[in-house]
Image 1 (cartoon, rainbow, N blue to C red):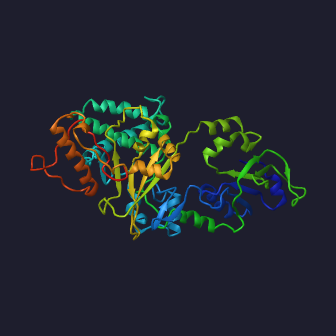
Image 2: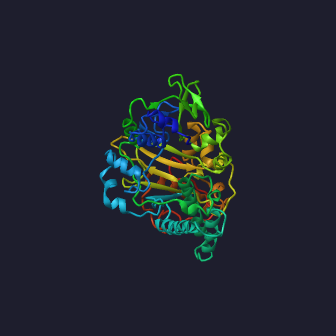
Image 3: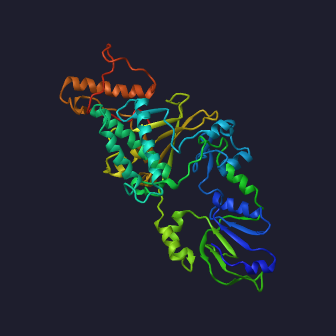
Length: 474
């Protein structure tokens, strides 16, 4: 928000500037202004007791855990976050290598190290790769409508589903494999919801989707924590710039305010804080989250913002992303595993109807990333979930979340548990094999099962059999 600073220039003391919010946007603005001689009077008003906003690293589980921002997306010379992190010595050798900076990912999440289906076994890596190629090729196509006079569908989600239906016409596999393909695609939709920060890709407009610019470089993390970046930026500021625990109540602008310590001088902006403190200024840079602006729009600015500004704030959409951290005494995954994909067989990329959130919120989980061990004794997985399911999870206690993610403690077998061979001895036998296979998958995810037909070998999959997640977190 800008206003006339002719009085400030005339006084020869330079304009007063206030930055509202001490996240990386506010810290970046403050650092840039502090480096310029024209802005000696600067304050950053932060509502909490810490800087960094949604960049927050904690020492937990014997190592570093990113509660907020996780990766540098597109770590290359065109990325200012990468440049600052490199300047401050916060990145590892691999992330800094020219080879890593030149990798073109297209902005897509890499293939998982391993994929598990809710039927109890692993999913063919070739099938996962095939569906990923299809999905990401369609995502690339959605970016081609940026300057088109009209689009073939209103939203990204509707376009993707329309194209998938056309591709399905050429699928020649059995129905069970087709359903599995749609379940894999549903997982990829959920991943894209996390990437785009939305509940559903049906809410993301197709026409402007291509505005997002993808930078080269394979996404990387901060070995010592993302917060090291904001800590270094804050340390570069003069010590009196940051003002903590100063939540702002109202920004009065387009006015004429005075201050006792500056007789004869007037300021067009007055920032009023919740504790009654007031800060007059010539300019204010507002960096608070969009959700806060939406919630406080009617009272945060006085006078109200111009109609076009207010409407822009009201219309811009955003979603909810959350993380789940699970700690294990021992890993059930292989040492080189980085990403575990979760595929729910009873879901489909083409079905919009969803069960009640309390019954199936966890099916929006896209999978789990293995956190670096840093020599810790325990092993930690980080799961990602977005959308309404993510918001519902916030209403649950840690105990309820853990209960939903550790269902595989009591298993049931018997003819009554088989969907198609109930009341038969072969149904009972198959159900026993099914649950045994689930436990085998739990304790040895990479084990090679005996070939069908060998003595006491595991039975081939039976359509309609009931299964569940093979690991203790789902």
